[in-house]
Length: 348
Image (tube, rainbow, N blue to C red):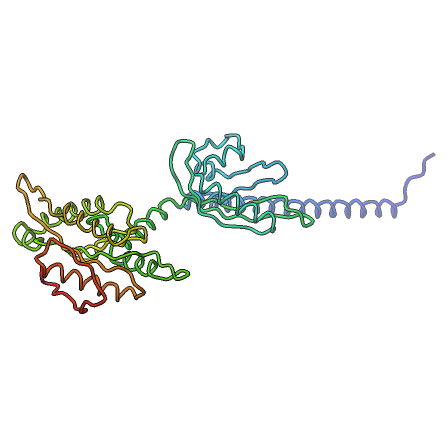
């Protein structure tokens, strides 16, 4: 016969079963708490990812990486969009590089190779032509990831900066060019003059400065108004550029005053011939609704001879004053024996 367990043993087993149940319940509670935490973290991560994706799309910033062993690329959606590629398109780095302009591709190769060699990173503003033929500027930032001192991966961000680039170019244009005529403005002229007169191994790049002042412009402006006067200035700029092909700079430095910087390639005889051509071209009537408007030009020439930019300007201005005093529609060349004097700015 089987012996019945004693009451003490039965009680002990019941206690153990109770403890096991409590332990299991405790474990289950812990697992549920961990699961809840994981769900909460997953939801938070998904929310953060959504915010990142929206911010990335709004800022036109995408993330990329390239495995250096096989050059395999991985992109986020925005990078596909930057290159106008479908988001499931196969990525071949050799083909992607072809989207960069020649200059940008060359610079990218130099900086990328250097960063991999030095195990650092680089930044670059590059121009691309997308799969749809759109021209864009992108800002690339890159870092190199290493394992055991060996570069294995390069990764970073690409951002669309096309609008920023256009705005910067427009700002630069306004800072350096005369909006009405499209010629270089006084600021660019002064900068160029300073650069050309700076001696490099005692061999300056500047041959001469020509100041061109219109004759008869004030009468046209006063008689027909500023709109007609502006059209005359635009035509003068076109003719002046045509006459001065190959010079260092043609600029508008005042209301009806222009400056031409000539390089060392022209001797004094050639510069004199250039002045005659300028006077001839600007002396031809400007058509205004079938009515010819007569303009003229006086030119002052200052050959560069070891002087400061301001001194060269004074010399050219002195020669210009002499040309106007000689009856206008002519030119004069400054000589070292000339008396320095400023012309009357109202004499037009």
